[in-house]
Structure formats: structure tokens, C-alpha cells
Image: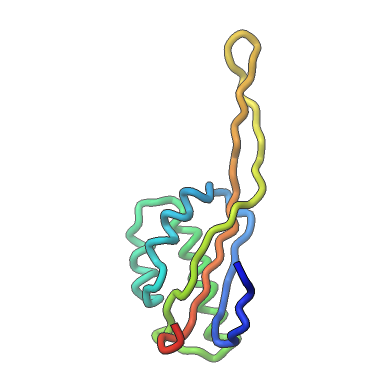
Length: 120
């Protein structure tokens, strides 16, 4: 993703989260372009395991906006939310006749960008 040059956008990133990017992207797509209070509500009632990690990143972005930029939380919306692929842990599972299968344990980098409503 290109770097944002606009100063009124605030981002938070969680790196090396032990959830597959494909599963995290399904959760992140639920909260795009929503007000932050509605997005937190959607994540709270989501049955996906990745919603806990995404909610944590969203809360961090809200806190960054309040403490570092002096924005009000009730005026923020999720402008951007995306998941990048992190490194993959490669594991081996023994199989029949002395062979082996590879198990890929994937990681994600989750990024959430919030902005004031009038800007988004």
C-alpha cells in the first residue's frame, strides 16, 4: 500500500499475528468504511477467531487518534483496513511409508487506518 501523505489519518499495525491472512481478510472486510463504534460491535459479535486480533488493532488505532492527534473517537470511521502476508512457519507431519507432508503455519500483518468522518 502507498504511504498516506494526509496527516489526519491515523494507523495501527499488528505484525506477525498467528492467523492465516485469508481468514483475517474475511474479518477485515466486515469493518471497512464503518464508524468505529459500529465496527467494534461487529467484531465483538463475530464468531471468527481473527476478530479478536482485528479488534485489538482497531482499538489501538482509536487510541492513537485520541492521544497523539487529539481526535474524538465518536467522530472516526475505518477508512482503510487490510491484511498483508507475513512469514510462514514450515512444519513437517509424518505420513505413511516414511514420507512427510509439509504444514504451513501462516502469519499476518494487520493494518487499520481511521480518519474523521468528513475526511473519509
